[in-house]
Image (cartoon, rainbow, N blue to C red; front, side):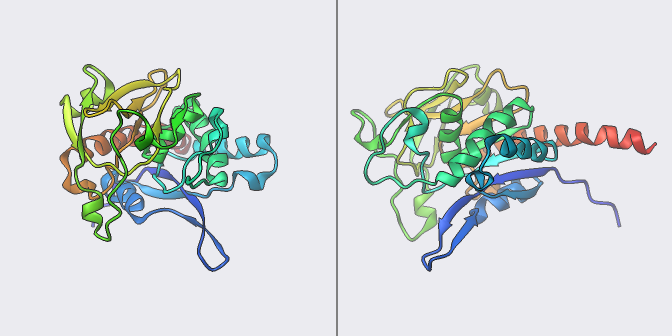
Length: 271
């Protein structure tokens, strides 16, 4: 029986949620776990939202760095919650759900993932986290911004309805996303209430919604490894979507490259 190819280790961000019965859970949607396994070909490693539990930023950052040294990629998930607006200098708007523990975990995680050259793929809330972590700001209610469409999902009990194609995006010519897709216009789903307002100084615009110009993708040009953030959800039935698979294939290739580089010193030491 042939030996299986090694799987890259993919850190997957979790949320901290009340379970409705007085208990709290660190949760990750199954579609993200399956995307890490099937679309990336990796082994998911769930990263709990525990930032506040450390009590000291220095100790938490040191732990993050050691964690990242053992990972081959990081996948930032979407979530019903939003980044607390004090992180980008705004007051909280009524009707927004927050996750303080996730913010305290993912915002430093993003900065250190990029600094340590670990491939990063961010989805929905993940894009918003990347933008805020690097100094950008968000619209808390995109649908209330003059000239913007309503980007929220239909809230149907049928997930195929919620994740159905919603609008086209205009891909920036010559950018990272254009190189990966080979197309200037693709159709994506839309399930978000918040979105980028001010683009972070280190971020580069990669795509906007054709209807209203809302940011749909960004990259970080000075990152040394694959770093891409999308406002839509490519993980939903990714294997059935050629556009999604082009993106996951590129992320997977970057993760495998890091895995090989991490393994090289161990192999030499064993010789």
